[in-house]
Image (cartoon, rainbow, N blue to C red):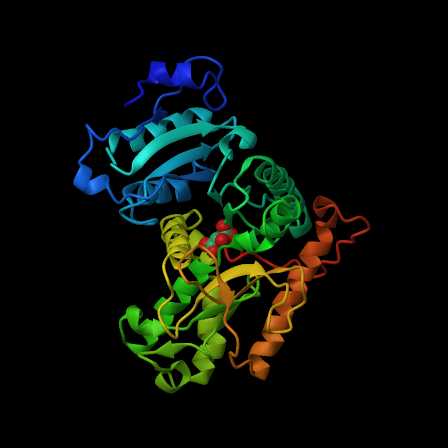
Length: 390
Ligand code: LMR
C-alpha cells in the first residue's frame, strides 16, 4: 500500500527533524503485490537502509541517484535512503529528496531527511559519511583534524546507539582515514572491520594514468594498491600493479616516470583538479564510492584486489595496529573483506609506506581525546596535505 504524505505523518509523527508537515520529497512505499510487476519483484531482497551524510552536497548529488537506480547495490536490491544534512542545508535537502521522488526509481522505496544523526542513522545497514568541513584559510592540519574529528565522534556515537550492529561505514569526509578511526572508536558496538575510509578514488586515478602511459584501455590495469593515508603521503603501488596481466614495470619500462611523475601526480591529483575546476572532485568521488561499495557486495575477480582503508589490527605487512590504513583487499561479496597477503614490498615502497604510517600515527595522537584516550600529544611537525590541498 502506498503511503501518502499525510499517512506518513500519521505513521511516524516526527519525520526526520520536523514536528509538523512531512518535508517535501519524503515518502515510504511498501510492497503491494497487486500493484507490482510480480515477475520483477518476486526475487527482490529485503530492503536495506542507507544513511548518507553531507546529503545536500555535490558528491551526494551524483551518488544518491546511482544508489537509487540500482547501479550500486544491484537490480534486485530495494533501498531506503536516509539523508543527513545540516541546519543550513535543510531546505536544500528537501530539493534533493524531491528530485529523487521525480525520478520514479522502482527500487527506491523510502526517502527520509533530517539533521539529527540519531534519527537518520536508525537501523542503517550502510552509513556513507560524506559531510565534512574543508580546511579554512590559515588553519593548521591539527585544527582540521579537531574540527572534523568532533563531527565524526558524534556520528560514531549515534551509529553505536541506533544503527544495525552489522552496519558498514564508509568515510569519505576528509581527513577520511583518521575520521574513520575516530568514528570507530566511538562505536564499540560495531565491529572495527565494518569501517572503511575511501581510497578507491586514488586507485581509479592511478589506473587511468597507468593505462594512458601504456596506451591501453584502463580495464586492463589491475592489482593496483593505494597504501596508507588519503593524503599526499599515499603510495600508489606500481610495483605490484599489472597491465594486461603483465607486471606494470615490464609494460611501462620507465622507472623514472613511475617514481617521479606518476607517483606525485596521483598524490596531488585532487589539488590539480581543484585548481582547474574551482572546487573539489565530486562526480569522480561519487563514482569511486559506488565502486568501493560494489567491491564489497560482489566477489572480487580471481587474482585481483581493490584498495580500501581499513583497521590495521592483525595486518600481514607489519603496519602498526590501531590505524585506518589503505591496503589491498578482496571480498567474497557479502560486504566483508580480507587483506591480500604476499605483495612484494621493495625498499622504495617500504620507505614511503612508513612515511604514510607515521603521518597517520601522528594524526591519531592529535585526536586521542576524541577517541576516549587521554594524554595524546599532537606531534605533527610537517603540515602534510590532503590530495586536494597544494
Ligand atoms: C580528492 O582527493 O579529490 C579530495 O580528497 C580532495 C580534497 O581534499 O577535498
